[in-house]
Every structure is written in structure tokens, then in C-alpha cells.
Amino acid sequence: MIWFFLLLTLSFYGSDHRISQSARYRHESMLLYFQQEESKKEAVSFWNRKYMFDNWSHYRNKLADLGVTVDSSFVTDMQGNPSGGKSQGFAYAGSYALSLNIDFTQAGLSDFHLFTSAVWRTGTNLSRDKIDNQFTVSQLYGSQTVRLDCLYLLKYFLDKRLSFKAGRLNAGDDFLCSPLYWQYVNNGFDGNPVSIFFNVPFTAYPKATWGAYAQGKPWEWLSIKAAVYNANSKIQANKYHGTNFTFASTNGVVWITEWQALVNQGKESHGLPGNYKVGFYYLTGSTHKFSGGFEKGDPGFYLLLDQMIYRKGGPSSDQGLTPFVSLISQPKDRNKFPFFVNGGLVYKGIIPGRTQDTASFGFVYGKYSEDLARAERAQGKQGPTAETVLELDYWVQITPWFYIMPDIQYIIRPKGLNTPNALVLGVQIGLDQW
Image (cartoon, rainbow, N blue to C red; front, side, top):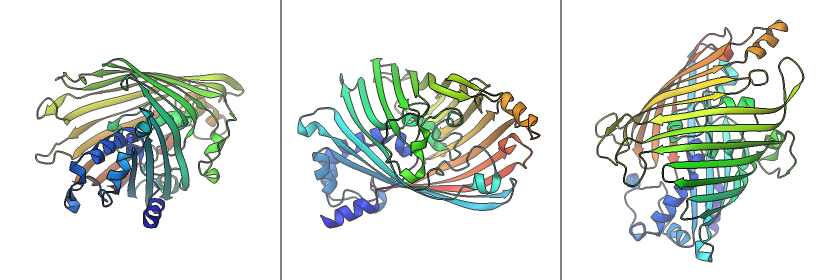
């Protein structure tokens, strides 16, 4: 067993938003897969495996029978800006991770789970070091260190129509998120519409905080979520490596709720699927106003919409064209981005025979606060206007566990100033190891 724990330790890291936001579903899928007799047969060829390391000579089957699943991935972005920005250069960002889920059904606690994850991030920041723009061109840059991420208990009720979880949580795993955002590299999309992070202490992978979350589905077409999170940004410092477990709050808490209409997603539905979400959040603490002084409380409102408009294949096919848009609004007197919008087009299976490939185009527009710009000009500085990002990429699924995604971005008015527009060329590579 020594070799197993050594391998576990070496692989207990990283991942991107795609992995963090889909972790619950990935572990449920793995548990079902490794409990099946089919997975206990002789391993398929290396390139056709569901996971890169297969089932560890059937150890994963044995663990799954005990309710234990492990998920590990590696993702890297390699990018350069041949023109524009403050200067030209190249940057690498990498993210390794492992998440562990224990389903206690075999112990007599049905639908009760313990989940934890850890992260190791490395690399440099092209946006900060060369371009000097606001919306980071690599979503993998942030918290470049080894750190504990989530650690929580989850309980399902009523055939999973109702769920509660509490512990160290990422708000961005459950709110303001969509699988469509994973198709992009710029942090303006992936993993959440990024303006909220500049306005309130909203937590997302790989920075967790204490919180409690509930979700209910009163009807098949409606999902209701609500949560509360501790608003203490100091515990997120890299020096704590995610292990500062204080309950002390520096600025109250963040309350958030999201209501989602799931269109044509029922068992008997044959129409084109869509998701229509509306959300509201509120920071209870005080926020500094750009004109001076403080304001108690800080509300925010958002809309997330996506709707497939063309489908290839039969009624159950996930191939086709899906547009999306997200919009966030907050008061301009105390928030850096009182208006933010992004949107795009995602086409899965655009090339015949390449059913798992995805082509994506999107835009990000973040308008800086007029009150902030006025305060900057009063100090003799240039007042920022808005930053815009255009992104085009193509996800090539090489094997079930390996993909490559060439990516092009164009940054217009970095930080809303007169810095030259920047062209960014890059590639993302991902491995689903376990």
C-alpha cells in the first residue's frame, strides 16, 4: 500500500474551474462507473480509457465499492502577446489537483458525503507582467501555491431534490456558473463572470471560505439556491495555504440566492435545452465609496441566459449551437465594475465526425465606475472607461482524458486606458488523470 499513498500524495493537486464546478457530478459518475462489472474487466487500450490511469489494477473498483472516489487533473495555459500591451512576452500557468469524495451509504448513512480538494498552482501572469490588462488572459493564474480548497459535508434528501452542504465552500462552484464558461481561457468567462470578484468578497476555486448552502427543486423545471459565506478576504492569503480556519469576519457575510428555470431538460423533453437564471447577492459589511466615506451594505443583481438554438443529431444529442449571455449590475458609487456583460456562441460537433470537439467565440465588456473615473481624474490620473475582450478557440478532444485547445484573444483598451490593444496567442492542454 506504500506505493499507493506515494502516488496519492504526488497527485493531490490542481485543476481548473471546469473540474471544480463539475466535481459533484464527476464523482457521482465515477462511483457508478467503477461499481459496474464492465469496469472490472480487462483494461481497454491506453488511448480509449475513460481515465488516463484507468482503474489502478482494480483498486478503484474496490474503493468505489466502499463509496470512495478520487479525481485528479492537470491543466496548463501557454500564452504570448506578439503585439500590444506594455511589452511583449510569454507566460505559462499550470494547475494540478485532486479531489476526494466519500459516500457513506455503505456505512448506513444514505446520501451523506464528505468532499475535499487541494490545489497546486504554478506559473506567471501575462496580464500583469506584460499586457497590464484587467481580465486575466489565463484563468489558471491565481493563488500560485499549494493550498487546501474545499472541505465540506453534503446531505441529499427527497431523492436528491433537496440538498444541504456546509464547511469550506466556493461560492463560484454553485452560483454565477455554467459549463459553457469552461470552453474559454480568459478569466472574464471562466469560471464565473469576473466582475463580481472586484466588487465583493465572492469566493471561487481555489479559494474557499466558511459557508452554508441549500438547493431545492420543487418542480423538475425549477431550481432554487441560497447560501451565506463568510466575508473575510484576509484568510485567502497564500501564506495560509487554505488552512486559516478562523470564523472571524472582517466585513460581515455575503448572502446570495439564484433561481433557475431549466427549459426542456426533463426526462420526457425533446425541445432545445436552455437555462435562465436570475440572482441577487448582498454584502452586509461596509464598502468604501469613491467619493469618500463608507456605505453600509452592497447589493448586486445578475442574469445568466443560455439557449440551444440548433441541434445536430437526435433529441438526446448535446451537439449543436448554443448562445449565452451574462449580465451583472451593482451601485456605481462603491463598485469598480457597476456594469459587466459577457456572451458568446458555443458549437459542439461543428466538424463532422468530431462529436466531442467544441468551437467557441465570446466577448467580455467591463465598464468601470464613473465615480471611480471621476476620483482618478481628480488626482491627475487618467480615468478608466471600459475593457473589452474578444476570444476565439477550438477544443480538440484527442482522447476521453486528453484535450488541446488553441486560443486567440484580443484585448481592447487594457484597464480602460490608452495602453495599446493586445493580441494574445496560446494553447490550453488538459489531462483527466484519474
